[in-house]
Length: 202
Image 1 (cartoon, rainbow, N blue to C red):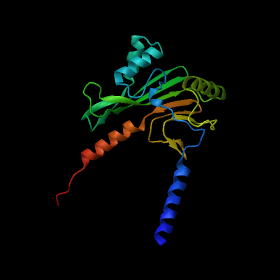
Image 2 (image 1 turned 45 degrees about the vertical axis):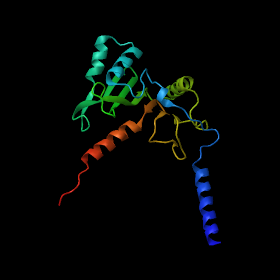
Image 3 (image 1 turned 135 degrees about the horizontal axis):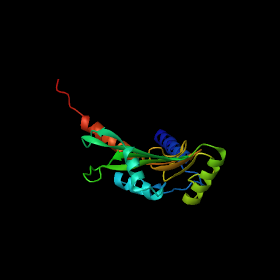
Image 4 (image 1 turned 120 degrees about the vertical axis):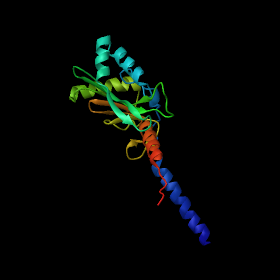
């Protein structure tokens, strides 16, 4: 009798937890890996990112060279050399910053991939409305239609933050639009940590 009582409690608790973390009826999954911001997609190589930036903003060869000069490099324990970490483009009131993570498995030809795209314009009431209108027109309704601000598109639900923060997502906050894939960065961190693992010989 006691066994059935305990089992009943466990089953009830499991069902309650499942219900609490279940996505609401009006929430829907969106595959943001197919999205592009200013011509850029997650997973693009460094060279592809430069080309896409130039094409989207109709830059001359000289202007693309300037964007390339903006590249920030960082040493990677994975590739054992310097790799592009980010590029930045600014013209007028428009700002674009693209971040890269080392690609795994390691690639000799395309060692880094776009992991974050940040597109920003001045944070004014009019610009916020215009950016929101453009985003809804281009990407469709966000994952949670109940939200009027801080819109997010994603494929994985999170009860607190609306979208799982460790998974790919598109976020619209005030005058900024951010498309990112935290998985790429996390894989790199885990790879580096595993490479540092040492069995002590004391």
